[in-house]
Length: 301
Image (cartoon, rainbow, N blue to C red):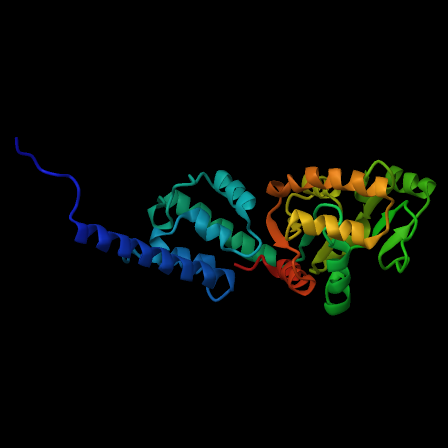
């Protein structure tokens, strides 16, 4: 019995594999250029729609790849944008229809306009990940960055300064601020002290075009997302779980019972990383701080 094989010759398979690798590398270059602001995502899209080679890296790139290469647009934000734009996850930039191209072009232009105004960047993460250390480094090394100062009912820790690290208020004053609507968000943390973000200074800064960095806990970040969905949420991660444990025990600010309770809380908090737009690993304070600061003007497209 005779028949023909559907398996391509070995030389064809090798050539196809080499072509696929070359295409992935070319798309990676485009994404890197966008991430490092050498090209705008809109210029990439326009190149794909110019009627040139449909196999070009711009045209063959998936829309989701392009969006997630934009600084400040993580997978969660990209998926949300694509759902709003009516673009399927499998769509390539060059394969979009006329109406989809129009919607995507408008979205990119709107984002460019928004980037010229102030933006709120929220820094959160599990307990003991080093949010305070990263924020302190930003305060010292990036004086141009406006950090929001939270109010709290807990007592100051050694070295903390009133009005710089927190506003330390009584429970009665905190209740008054809640009643008068002075908080953007507030929450009870670790079943103990309350923390809140005064709304007035943030609204004033954003209105003048200044960006604001807000360091808060996970509950607070969720509350900000609900009240200000345009805010960018950054999740600070530890290099490893073992390093998180070492940091918590090493700082010596809690009793052994409190440490155990916070570690259990941290396990739950780490699982919330998927709710955030951007992830930053705190393996080096200076590097993590620079990555967070970069998000303050990351909206430029």
